[in-house]
Length: 111
Image 1 (cartoon, rainbow, N blue to C red):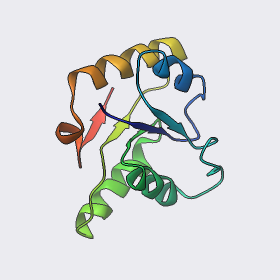
Image 2: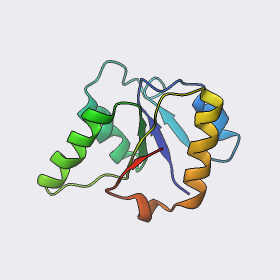
Image 3: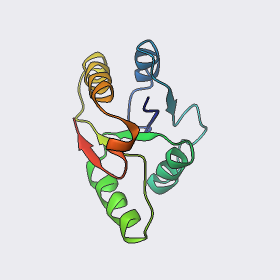
Image 4: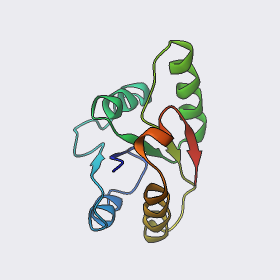
């Protein structure tokens, strides 16, 4: 099952909503990473073997490209449009149910 790390711009309520569906979710707050750079956040997710959920499209598209140029990978970046947290949790859960950790590795996904 895919593990998820959420950026600080994602409502922390997503964690219990996805936990209730059986997903393991780490948050920036829970990992004491508030205020750290986007690169540090993504590296933390990589170390935890988690896909990364964010609303920050531009920065994380660039980071994905930069990592690829450096010959490094990530566990997947999921860029979500801002919406009601319950709708976001439903969409993320549905996406994660249809994917595997291997299928999203080094990919940027938009939901």
